[in-house]
Image (cartoon, rainbow, N blue to C red; front, side, top):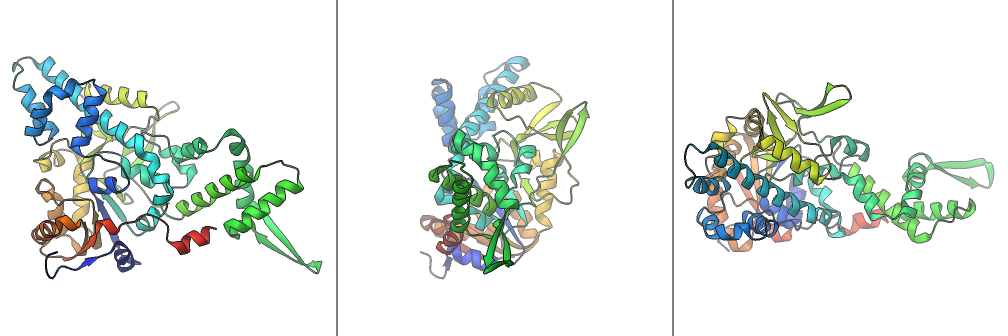
Length: 429
């Protein structure tokens, strides 16, 4: 370890930023920490799997291009006649759709890991921030934040995956689903009457104030008294789900990705991004697969099925008036950003920040210097950066060059844990 560098723990960072103005910036390492590998190598591996070895023939070329999608496509286009615009466009669109499909499948295959017990406490991290920024092109951060929005809002804000209510339903069988709404209604509206001696001294207490164990006991007594026939294991699973939902819903009523639902004609609606939004606090700095430009407007894909998603992406890529808002290349990203109103709005947001910036999962790579320059030019006071033990010397030196005007603290990436603290687990019980 380099002498003089103080490495904090994850919990020390949470304590330091409590009750302050904070912002979160994530890179691919954030996904890794939740068991989702969306690195370029992983994506190309998935492309090879999906296309029965088609891309394996290009492995060496992909490596030469440092897994930069735009450079890879440009290399392939060198062998296409300049006047063959059809083949040029076909190759470009085919590779991009395969790339996006691979990322989508990687994220979708692992998305339920955020529902695992080991990750239950991630809301303890997320609740500390005013704004959320992602360097990634996948929609994972958006899905994660949707998990912590009230379920009635989930149904209106879903993008390319089923929203969280669907996961609740999938985790329960039909018998548990049939009692979910009744128990949930009891939790929201029910009252417990306690008689002290006689009815004139009775005390009413809302069931919403009961602990998990006490509420579960009352539900079981209700089932027995009213001959509902509910099994103990079904009650326990539903009650557990309801309490987990309450923990999530404390967090992120405020999450706003900047899109507004507008009627286009009849009963059809589209989500349009308002680049002048004052309430937006979720920003995809390099775009994302669910964001596309249609003429002068930037819109959001909201289809729920895989088939619908791929059809929409193919339609967008093949439409001269539309394009996916996503910075595929690793270099010269700023050129693309200045050509797109959505990306430029996200980029400009960084320079107006105050308070603290927490960076998780970024290697502070040179091709993201445009982002770090904006942060350094902002009124951010302190930057907290996650760091792996093997990269302490490298990242600490990079950080000094990226943020020369900021106070910098590093924290051990391996100390990050999204498990609920014991005291919170006890409260849930």
